[in-house]
Amino acid sequence: MMKSIDIHAYYGPWPWPIGVDWTVPSILKIMDEYEIEKAIFMSNLALLYDFREGNRILKEAIDGEERLFGYVVVNLNYPEESIEEIRTYFKYRNFVGAKIHQVFAETPVNVKRGKPAIQELARHNRPLLVHTFDERLEPYSSPLHAVEVAEEHPDLKIILGHMGGYHWMTAVKAAQQAENIYLDLQSSCIDRDKIAETVSELGAKKILFGTGMTEGAPERSLGMIEDAEITTREKEMILYKNAKDIFRL
Image (tube, rainbow, N blue to C red; front, top):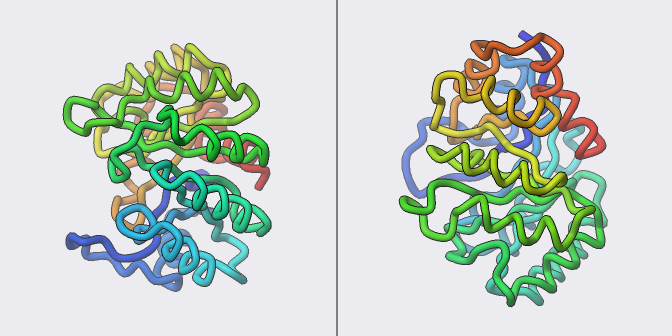
């Protein structure tokens, strides 16, 4: 098993059963088991209910843990509050990116009222992880919403979470349209040859590894990489090197 950096992990309880202990000691145990060197977490509370309170609780949880990092969750329905959260949490070394959930917020990342918050993100030059999926199943979730933002802010690295779900080729097309768009392979959609085809279209440097723990099982994402018909060097890039470079870990 190769070492990895997990760029898509969750902290806190979900409003549905997952059967996994999400506390820090349990998280570190999972990371040890799967040779995950570092992981970047977002707060479930911040995604689903109160982004400010969720961000605060996440900071308390990861402070002092050298292997655990955080995303500041922002909600573009509240641009002024989001700007305040960005300025607050990007002061800290262990908050290395931002997260926008287009579906839970019912707001696309390119919404006009969110532009001031996106501008603030771009000013700090830290990656933005955006939830994407099949818009027919999850309104607002299209990967194509990110293209406009990427073009307006060419220095802002945008990562398409879940790689567009079942319509992952839409995410591939979005990444082809902007140099600063990357793909996060974490997803319940584990189509055969998905990784190999994406590498063929984009190159390995545009793909990042995520597990979705503690909701998802790390072996799902690891299995996609292990079974992909790509080179060992390309697997190392996806699992580790790309995240190390993009997040400066």
